[in-house]
Amino acid sequence: MQKVAVISLGCPKNTVEAEYLLGIFRNKGFVISNNLDEVDIAVIHTCSFIKTAKSESEKYIRKVLNIKKKKGLRIYVSGCLPQLLKEKMSMLFPNIDGFVGTGTLQRLPDLILNKNFDKLFLPPGGLNNSNYRMLSSNLPLAYLKIAEGCEHKCSFCIIPMLRGKYESRTIESLVDEAKALAESGIKELILIAQDTTSYGQDIYDRFSLDKLLIKLSKIGGLKWIRLLYAYPSSITDNLLEVLKEHKNICNYIDVPIQHISKNILSAMKRPLNTANIIEKIKNKLSDIVLRTSVITGFPGETKKDVNELISFLNDGYFQYVGVFEYSDQKKADSSRLKKHIEASIAKERRVLIENAQYNVFKSKIDKIKNKTVEFIVENCVKKGNRYYIEGRGSFQSPEIDGNVILTNDRPLTIGEFHKAKIKCVNGYDIKLYI
Image (cartoon, rainbow, N blue to C red; front, side):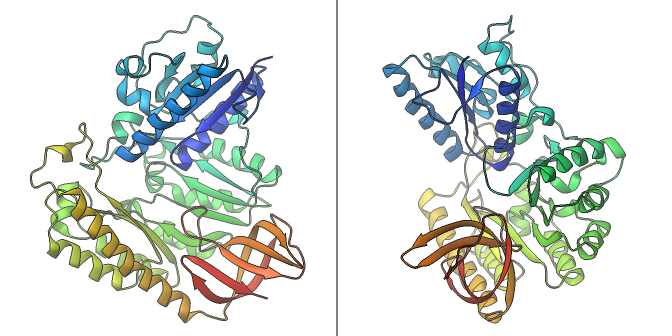
């Protein structure tokens, strides 16, 4: 039997697809391994949303190609990079054994097994084959991809080109997958898509995330349900009411606003009433924890635009903010805009905004010192006579919002929930004490 490794690069949406691929490979009789030194086949599932992601994918492919020189390893590349490059993929990497784009992921095993695979690139799409999902982590959390593609026309984004039109999965299929995940021991379910809040409009003729969340909240064993990638203008009053009423839905939303200046939002082709939407969320759910992401150095951005953004962030709407320098994609509409900003200036603005937001974050945590919070244990290591414990609160998404950390005289079991008091912050990590 052939051994295969699937390496996922990029966002959680790619992680889910890689887990579907793992399950499909296992069902086809492949042996799964994460050790490149012992496998016969390596599949690199790539991202190319921004320049840095594209560069990371290309760098990793070259790394694995170097391994191929030393042993008889076959290499296949899947996902967004082949979808972006298409026929150029073979020219750039002539030594890879095959590749598939986002619309042909399910046919990757056929390509490897040489079963009359047609190498033509099909329309963009994604993989939602939950029947064969194989989780890639031992942590008690899993992502649930509720839709594929995107209908928005953001000028800086090539996701619609890479992933195609918006396609929701049915509520029934998502509930079935969530139940299976809960039965396998998953305690936290994180909903993702290119745009989670547009869920259902294409198949139910209305925004239906509220209905989906009600169904998911009834599944036994799911302690936390978390919402990421919420598009501002699709956040409905019904959705906010559901968040308010159900205790196992985290009082947390990730709402990427990208900017707040109407000048820049207009150039980005983003909702101009973003500020009003954020204010509405906070008015209806005053204690909700909000995360967002913003872009610095967008073409045409002025110092006034930056100051307006900093002023808005200083109002304290957001606890966590990811700040990214503008990435110019030749196939994106924004590449043709005038007044491009120098990379060094974009970087300076990023640092300026990051520093301003950190002060907001720290002041928020300072105000709730000694407050008791519940957390899930994700790591426990003995150091001397004490145990070093890492976890997350319901107000923290994995990998992006920091951790809660504490030392204890007894070990805590990974996957269990405990309570402790907030002591102080260290960067974006929050120290606790019992």
